[in-house]
Image (cartoon, rainbow, N blue to C red; front, side, top):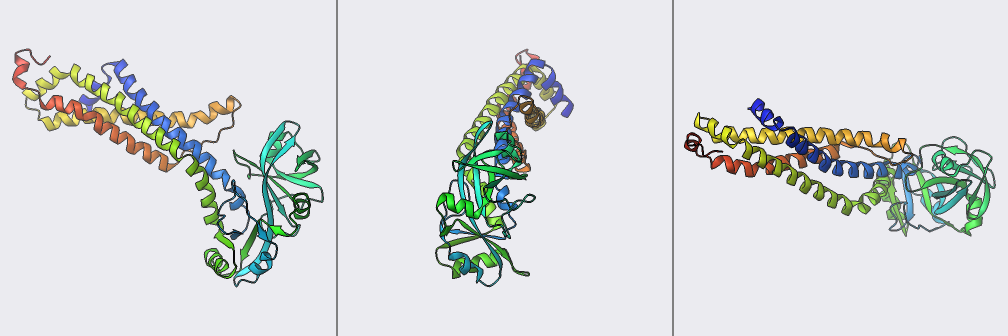
Length: 368
């Protein structure tokens, strides 16, 4: 059965390439878009996941960083510090600004932290001095800045004191100022944006976050893991419609190509199927041959689509384009499921042809 299916599929090289190539391009649409979104999601939460804070406390209703404004009275810091289970608190000011350097400008998260910050600070060159800024290395590269150079933050000149690593994302860079500099330039001396909490030994972040929300008025508190999930969900929600449209397009393209190829392949071999049926092959056996042809096509197409998705970042990098792509198991399973749907649906019409074959017509020359 498998040999017959493979021979029928590959007998016409043009039809074979059309079948596999069409399915590959359709599934590649799905895989590449999913890989782009996954590549955006991961780095987006890096400042949260690497902050060292067990709990993030914000203005009530604020549950992520991207495109939000959180303002808390400065007195909330002491109130949060008094909640059972809290080991330390770090006030943080936060906004998004355009930073400028020799190579142009780039949007950046700007964090203001005290010199003795227990959480939120980048590894390495900390603290910055007065009038100094620490940049993520990716942001520094984009702006063309090195240690000792001058960057424009809030319209003022700041000396680059050093660099952090692994915090930038495709949407924004990351930079750090002293809390005092941030508060002075933004006139935020009596407010903070977030309170970063480290919990005591034996305490869970979820438990302490729940107690903070119960005991401190006007705040939301989330564990680091929950806050990071909300941050990643921002990109996922923004791209949900595009994903659904491309998934549907990929499914329809794959189905149309496979249905056409399977129909013409079965039609061209109709006489052979008639002979097999006349020799005693059951319709069920012939159905399995047709289904095996479809599975061969979509299996090869899926493999080629995965290969295209893995090679694409290398091609983009060679062209000087920095587009993050991350292929996930969830995306592979989804594409595999779509491939099976395409294979099953594309086999339905040829099966109807086979079911209607009359073996006697073979001998009268009517099967052709």
